[in-house]
Length: 113
Length: 114
Image (cartoon, rainbow over all chains, first blue to last red; front, side, top):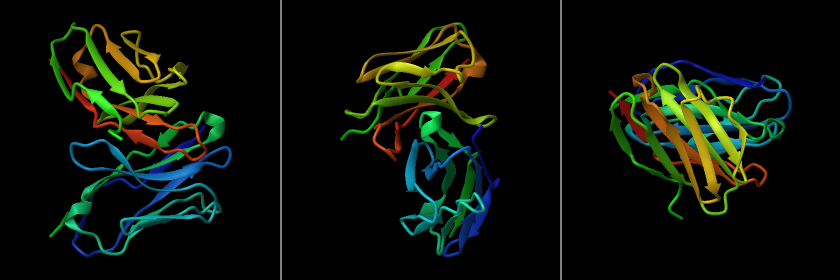
């Protein structure tokens, strides 16, 4: 079956530091890949997505590239802000699985001023 | 668009009571999903509907849990009887069936069963 593995947190950074959250996946076909963000007390919001190999998703300074050869979709941001403190979820969906989202365990990021 | 609407936002009840959580998906979305989030188990898919029909309920933990979608604009998740281990945040999400359609999440219902 499909699965998503992401690095465990918490990740603690200083403001303006570089952020990387690793995500790898296992899928039987050609999934779409997503990063969702959950701010405290809120639901999940889509941060970015990529639907085919070598696509790069980007939003709010975050980027992730769909790497089929390494089955990875690592999230990066060059200079984090305190407001980026949240839990980040990597996920995949596949048409053959009814387009259900399969989530990783989430990575909590804490950015200190 | 108002987004996915869930009610109530918070629910505190006593063990053994019936709990009903409500969700209004985004207008025009074909699929609806119910998730549960806890510290121990993370985010779990409980059930999802496509065009109001339950497609996969393999994530529903026990017979105490049931979900319905009587029409395209409303769904309920019911727990009867509730137990303390059901305490969690329950999220509803909806999605268009267009290719690549993302899921949009509601704000969640925080359930506490005493």
